[in-house]
Image (cartoon, rainbow, N blue to C red; front, side):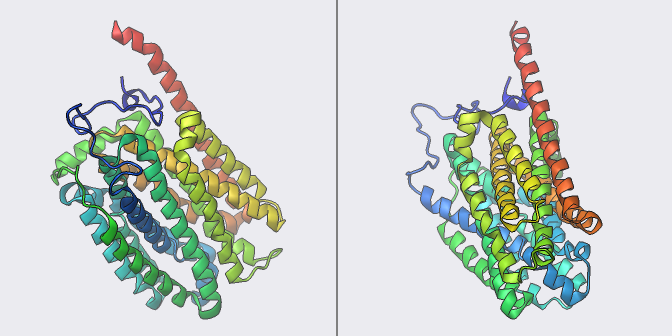
Length: 433
């Protein structure tokens, strides 16, 4: 039985089971891209830039929430909807957009998604009210929905299996760079010229990334158009949701993102208040710790190679939990160290889980990735709103409490997966006979 059917771990570097879409014969060498091969660098840079644009746009208001609260006279919970609406829009539309990518191609859908998202991004600075801002952000998130699932499906089809975790890790690293640069840039620009100019600058940067992405990304060579019939899509989604391993991976992605969304939505409020009282530019610079995520995501393949997928998830969860507890201190160096650990743990866990989804699904990969992304961004929206509500009710300790519960969920699901794998291995001899 395959890992997908038993819930067993998929070890990076192992030879995947042969399917109709992935079989290669001795007379037909694998023509997919690999590190050092033709097109691999262009592909990596293109998707890295797409990741930068996606996260820079998606979280462009997160570091600016105290300023948005001040201008519109709203509390943290209401201002946090400018983040939650974007991630929620992405979560709602990622599955339909993945279906379009199955029919019209990954590159076409990714290009169209970026074009619409950057166009809406140029309107965001002119939002006349908090309600209009939330609506624009929801539209922007819906437009960006064509990127994450299509990108991972593109990689699964165009990159050799042994290089897949590394390739997806680079895309996730682009996410971290986009998230970091967007928040740092908006922090300093907003300190001088206000939040509207800051989000406008992010829009211009995203335009440049979108143009470069389209020019660099190699045309797909292994894409086969699928069907847009609702019944076919429903059957594919049902098959993925019936797979216990995929269900666990979706839940893990959602829980990791609940931690991350809550922490980074609220951290600006905490650091601008006593005992820290930091200015907006310094608060924005806190997001430089995303560089740690860039490293942890891009090295996820080696981590899984040494520890296995479940071992890597345990390490990521433990690192995240340690960071949450450290961040409770009223010492700025300890808070900063806590954010470093949270960021490293989150990006490692996300890279491991998302790459495992791509390796597990041999059919309907875009839908499998879309379901992961949907769960992931539902977690982001939940973390943003619940984390802000917990902060309002109990201060930073409330937000940390939400994060710790989510990490415990990751550990519990991983333990259950380990048990399911052991049971499946014991049953294998009986099935064979």
